[in-house]
Amino acid sequence: MDAKDATVLKKSVEGKTVPIVDITPFTTTGYSPEVKKHVATELASKASIDGCVGISGHGVPDEVVATAFVMTKKLFELPFEEKMKAPHPDAPVPHRGYSGTGRENAARKTETEDWDGSAKKADYEKLTDYKESYEIGSESNEVNYNIWLPEQAFPGFRTWGLELYWRLHETAMSILEALMMSLELAEDEMEEVRALHTGHDHQLRLLHYPPIEEVLRKDKHTSRLGAHTDWSQFTLLFQDEHGGLQFLNRSTGEFIDAVPMEGVLYMNIGDMFQRISNGFYPSALHRVIIKNPHASRYSIPFFVPPNSDGIIRPQPSRVEKDGEEKYEVVTFREYSRKAFESMNVYN
Ligand SMILES: O=C(O)CCC(=O)C(=O)O
Ligand SMILES: [Fe+2]
Image (cartoon, rainbow, N blue to C red; front, side, top):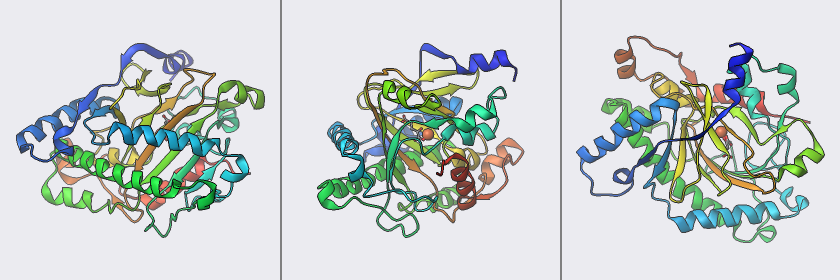
């Protein structure tokens, strides 16, 4: 890609937005297979373009989402010393607890995949994402075990976090069913994919992006969140009213807005489901730009990775349709270890 193309890639298009699909028939009982098939087909046509789609009818009540943002804000408003009572370790595992600003560099992972040939490696090396985060998982995950604040530091936080985790698990599994139906997988293939999801491997992430004036005072090598793909199967995301999340329009090379809308979550395909689907669904390149520099921005992604021993292979019926196997078999453990190492900034 030459320098001119790279300029285009960095531009975003005003007015063009991410498509929306209503998945109510997958989150509510009583719908016929024909109706579900109709939704799955719509999902296939919309989400296969850029690997992203807005989802309504996802089953998470508005009040639950509103409370989630109240709790997230309260968490990050705690004094730094309090938040550091649940520190993320200086290691990839467990990927849990609180990370202060400047620890991650999401674009670094993607840059190694050469999405933008003009990117100056030295600049990427210096760049850090200016955000703070807190990761929550299942209490039964013994590898990625939770790192909690003491109860008195934030009463009710732990109970709330786990409730939200399991609520989002339900939605995620409904979306998985829709995705599998959209790929027309055989029943044994669906069983193989379902078996990758025991429920204990998701990652609920609470995110805070501070106002930008504060960022600029501290360091010029910062971004809200550099362009990257997720390594999950797929990711669900709620963002506040400030917006800023964008996905790459693969045909034009421009980024399009994921506009905040009540009742809509954004779903993006990650590296693993790109492989499972033999490339039918592309892993979505996304970033967070500054829409309102004066305000804090909050978002809540829910990553849906396969379990860590999971073997990820393009499903045979897709390979047969495509006439070639586009990806080699990988284990999620090895894939995610490499991805995590490449994007973390250790002191
Ligand atoms: O904050 C957002 O809207 C995006 C977060 C994200 O892409 C990530 O954490 O991987
Ligand atoms: Fe992401």
